[in-house]
Length: 337
Image (cartoon, rainbow, N blue to C red; front, side, top):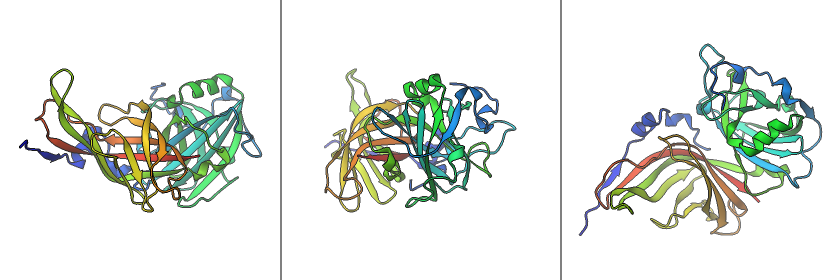
């Protein structure tokens, strides 16, 4: 009989290798300049930003985007203002239609925002403000279930080149929420394009659940080149709200999420976004209902795995059949129809 080894790689070691601390992930849920431009709180004058009154308008022909914000994503500047609220988190959706940019954002674990922007800059880099939503703070919706506050509204951005760049490469832009205690940015998150569509007026009904405890599970298998390496076998995680996350069956490659009320969804890969050599990729997945038709997953159409930490398969040779569980962190965003 083949002997199977089960190995658990410690969370501390994985976090240290990733260069971050898992504790900075709240458990619920281009320009590489070193200047403080990305934390100045001043919008680029070329962006032509003006606050608009009224709602977000029709959704027909609009482009939709999502960002999951936390303090660990902030990039400090030497001698610059304080950044990175370790307790904070926010979930932001953006709609672009013509020269109108609408936002729906909710936050928790951080103080009342003093500024809210879209900056142009890749992960790990600061960049200038391209869209400024600050004028919307204190207006529109202020509370939503489970979050400390929320705001919705629309601004006009006259710089077509900025909006074209944002729609073409949303991951090259980031959302930044500032507070009095963290004027350089309390929480930050890169943008991702939403493949499906939803009524933007209901954007705040979309929800997020973070990994409370989880492992990416790998099995040592023989590859096409004849060598043995660790390949994905399963995932075992508990998310906020007691959501269970695993594969439908080991080695199936099909992830599933099951709520306490037995509503459930499976996911099929749409796209991957690399998140550094020491972190598993961020994912966009199409959701299919697999459980009861009522409950939190009854209307889920798309799932994002964002802000990943750790979880990478061990490198090098291995013994056939051995299994390892590598701890990881992530925020899962569930987009509703």
